Image (cartoon, rainbow, N blue to C red; front, side, top):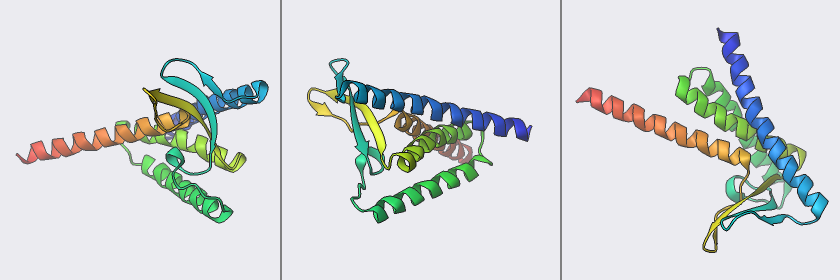
Length: 163
């Protein structure tokens, strides 16, 4: 049973990692082939390749290698902590952590391979552009929202039991 769970956890994380890799490689290859990185798809969505050397949404971007390497080490430690949490997680929490881990491994790979993370999904509304992000960020965000939802449900359940 434990081996099966480990296999499915690994398969889930690897699937997310590969979906992210394929999307990033496609965008990078498109940018290299056509020489531009801003592709308008709809009235609210562009594909616009940028290289993010910070963390989520370009925050904590450093021009020196020490800051970049420190952030990369912290990200690795957070991934390790989440993987440890995975061992004792219930089903919904486990799926949430797997979503986060799959995306986090995708972005960590890019940090190590490219020294930056390729972001390219650009949503906007009436001239307001949200932060540019990638597929890994979508999975991480979904996982975080699921964790928040699970915690709210647990807290409500505990509060209802006290009444």
